[in-house]
Image (cartoon, rainbow, N blue to C red; front, side, top):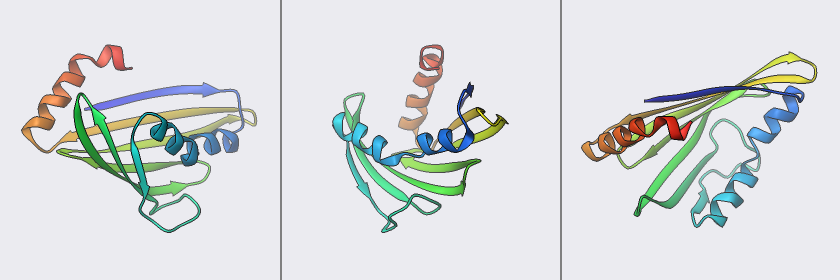
Length: 133
């Protein structure tokens, strides 16, 4: 199952890239919502190979996810691969400069079920797709 969206943003590409890869803000946001976040790599900077383990509750069940940045091309974008239970997937973030002060942001999320329970979860997401996008 794929979700995708595009948005034109009135900001330079470097500024948009920095906001989309601000993992410290995302970590704090997840922690405020009750998730546990653990950085797996020892790098001080974010780039290819950066990885996290996240534990959270979704639909009343405890879930564990591992996320790894697999491709990293500043300021053009990056790819994050993830696994959680029976679901594997990727998130691709692409940035295209339209002008010195305008950037097109494209995000694509792909989910692939690897178990029957995951297939049921993704099927329910397909049914609710219009309210998720």
